[in-house]
Structures are given as structure tokens and as C-alpha cells.
Image (tube, rainbow, N blue to C red):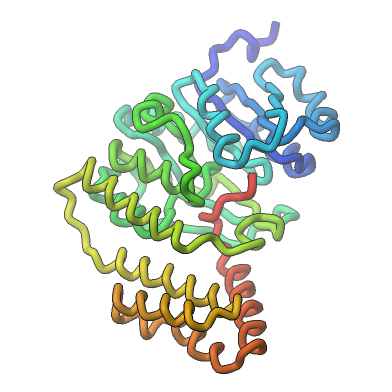
Length: 339
């Protein structure tokens, strides 16, 4: 029996997949290339376990650390992630999306950090975005110093932006996740962001300043296929405020960034309405944005709204193209991939 077969595992890794075998093999190879080898990985196919995925994985299943587990049907993104999370028995847990990659020291760095900071609930690093061919597009930086950060430092940032990004960037302490709720909450579109917030209000958060995870950006992701429900985002922000009030009642933070965030979401809803040809609703959202944050009148989204409304169908078409181009250029990797 190999050393890998008898060595107790320290990290449970979950790879949710919807059958993208080419990307999946690349992701799995980056797990095999980790300098920290005390892991076990489960590939959870969010479908009926098609022959293509099973056949592609067959050579890898010789390794006793690798398990293939089809769900038997499409159970949804968050439930598939939860399925992997609830199977975890090791001290640490990580998700690697099937189209993302880790550099060799990804696990080594994070395990060392959590071992050295036993109070931290999870640790993350900034991400590199890559295209479909694996070429680097952009590097992201959440503007945090390296180390362990108390809620007073992390929460004001996390309230208004998913600074952690997708699950592929983080290593979680399994016991901390059990304490805050052992599931990704699919009531919210951004259920990964909600998980980070739920942990950050209860535990210190670790940050390692290195770019050792790569998040792939491609046109089949939900990032580029449709706009999220803006009212759902507003409900999520309300939920975040309630979490802070419940677990960090004495925390004082500047309310302006959150007001600016709400106004930006409302203006995005206004632009969504323009694209659908609903002028009245668009103006209603714009008025709400200005009431929440008066300076939103100077926002570029407000200017785009004012410019497109008088042009009718031509304005809607031009707006749609412009928004897609901006989204492609900004590469918003905080939006989760569709698996």
C-alpha cells in the first residue's frame, strides 16, 4: 500500500463539476501537484454521472485519495458545494472549482497559516484571473496586510465587496464552518460571499499575500450569461447588517460605503430595467438610489441611464453592448462560476 493510502489526510478538497472534462483534468492535476500531500479529494458531478467524466477520471481513481461521486441529478450549485462540505472530516476544507487552478504551494501556505493561527476561521489570498487557455488576465488585491485580522478590520470591507472571491481562493477550518452552519445558503445568489461573512463575524480571518490561485474567466459562466436579481443583492446586504448587529453589536463602521453600495445596486437595477424597455421602473430605481446616497447622481451608471433613455431601442442596444464590454474588461471574479 502506498504512503498516500495510509497517511491520514489533513485537508478535504471538494471539486464540484458539471462535466467540463478538459478543465476538470487541469484542476485535478494542480491538486496532485501540491507540496502538501495530506489531502483527500472528492469530485462531485452535479449531473447523472455521464460517461465522459467517469472515463476521464478513471486513470486518477487508482490514487486512493481521489473519489468520484456523481449526484445522480442536477441538484444545483450551492447544494453541490454543501454536499462536499458536509462530507468533510479533516481539520481543513477547500473547494476547487473545476475550471480553476492552484499553484503547488496553495495548500502548504494555508495549512501552515491555520496551524499557526488556531483562532482563524479561514484563510484566503488574492486571485489571478486567467482566460480559457490559461493565460493570465489580471491580478486582484483586496488591500489587506498579510496576517490574521479581527472582525473590526475585515467586516467593513466584506460588507460592501466580496474581497475573498470564489471558494477556490480559500482554506476553511472545518470546525469553524460547523459552528456557523454547515451549508452554503442558497437563499442568496452570492452564497459564497454569504459564507465568508458568516465566518468573519464570528472568527478572525487570515490573509496570505500571494497569488497562488487562478480563477478562470470564460463566456459560459453566469457572470456573462445574465444579470443577478438586484433585489436579492439588497436582501443580502440587509442580511449582512443583521449578522454584524447580532455577533458584533459594538462594531462601529462608516455607513457611507454601504449606502454607496446600495445605491450602485439600485442603479444597476435601473439599467437592467432600461434594457428590458421598462422606463418607469428604471426611473423608480434611480430615484431610490439618489435617496439612499445623494451623490449617486454623479455615478457613471446614472449618466449611462440618462444617455440611453431618450434613444429608445437604439439606446437599449448600445447600453447592453457597453455593459457587457465593461464586465469583460473588469473581470468580476467575485461572481461564482455556474457549478
